[in-house]
Length: 259
Image (cartoon, rainbow, N blue to C red):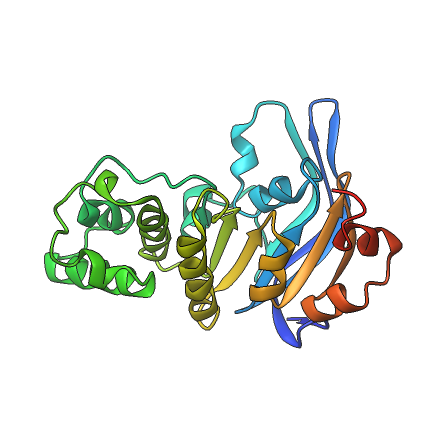
């Protein structure tokens, strides 16, 4: 498997000549991108530039939008996820997702985490208990909720709910975690906790995140990708992209001349 030259890590996602249309609208144009394994890749760019659309192609969330046409390849560990024999449910187990707004199920904290493992098999109670604890620990939430796991997840604060959604995604043991502006609805303290969590999770998972905050991309990512009008303008190691961008459009964006 190829190595991502921007990070010296193995490539886990390889996007080749990707085009996406929403009926007549050409949303993604001739995109080529390599995403490194067990690293954080951040997508930045102004609203409507295609970054969330590309993120949703990585676990086929765009399949749900009528009139979507995709051309090109999205390879995950060498397998084209748009191939005819791909089971989308299995793909979404491998590629978890956390959304902009926390979206816990109207169930107990325990049942939110147990939902995925139960869906994909019938683990024994002891195994399920262990998975719930492990996932909540990974999401840095266990100590805050361990004494009331049967309480409704909707009773948690916004920041806790978002960490619960991260724990829920981790409970099915994915390889890749997608985060679509996962902190934009949170207060600064909760945002800091999630950023600290991302720094821990990168040791075990590949994380691809869309962020509206260039400061956040600079703080937490290994590689940054700048989008504009459905095109990838520049992709580089984060330090290089922010300190020495090669494209003048990237420099204009990160220096605040537009966006």
